[in-house]
Length: 165
Image 1 (cartoon, rainbow, N blue to C red):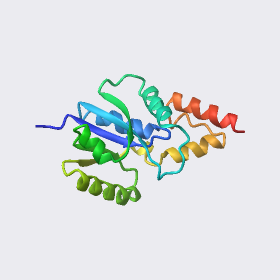
Image 2: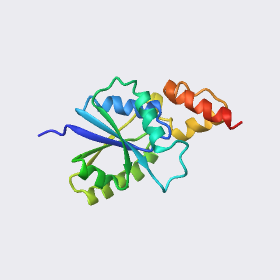
Image 3: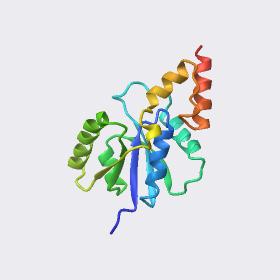
Image 4: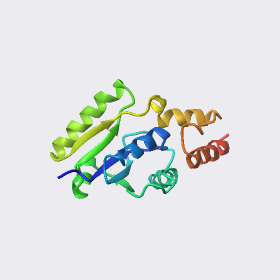
């Protein structure tokens, strides 16, 4: 029996066109994608709250992809997957440097929930350099981020960084 749904977790602070590319391509592989906006206390303080990030994911998807659900993930990914009967996690790999960390996470998640497999998707070449952190830095310095994020995210970043000047 094939796997029908998969989990795509991330902080999405903010969601970029690279993330969206992975989501769109994952919908071709699975009947349902659960985008899990992670609350991660070990990372630096996010620019957006978890609910704002979830809202921006929703707005960025243009409400056009029915097989995508957006949830907020608190706690262990493996427990979330077990509780929601999910057996596949999707992770994006931009560069070889991402692989070591992602590989370790995949092994730990499988240790915590043996039925959980991780599938790595590489982005389209035009997004290989893109990260949420770089987008925030460009926006902070007044640069145009409209090629890297949805219009909803670009507008929100402009509002935040215009107010802080």
